[in-house]
Amino acid sequence: MRVGFGYDSHRLAEGRRLVLGGVEIPFEKGCVAHSDGDALIHALCDALLGAAGLSDIGSHFPDTDNQYKNIDSKILLAKVVELLDRKGLKINNVDVTIVIERPKMAPYHDMMIQTLASVMRIAPERLAIKAKTNEKLGFVGSGDGVVCFATCTLADPDEPMSRP
Ligand code: MG
Image (cartoon, rainbow, N blue to C red; front, side):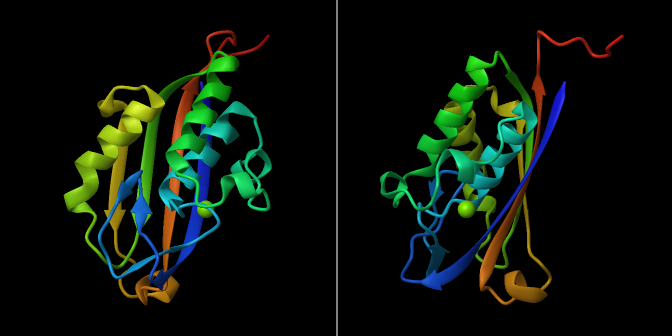
């Protein structure tokens, strides 16, 4: 089994789309980013890549490359899953936390689970998404940004649990 961890944050500004977990959320602010700014998917990609020993999202999809400008992050996630497939790695489970002061994420939870499970081709019960506020503390608490954390485990069928 391999464990991965990922983190991402984005600034929130007026006049931008808010997309988290592959779901567009109506709100007065959205993420400032080169891509669609889906911090949840970016943290998730880093967790998956990290567990696979495949570096990070920035090295695979550089934000200096125009082909990734405003790209739907679900496409990046699908590409990451393809890289795992090529190494024979299977996603065992994924656990994500979103930290955002507003808006409430609860109405979008089920849609995020369905969307991401389908992109990763895993059963929805292998994926957990939690959301919380930052108790009005710091840049998240003031509504200036969003932070996401993701962990995952990957099953590596070729590798024994312990080595001689
Ligand atoms: Mg990002």
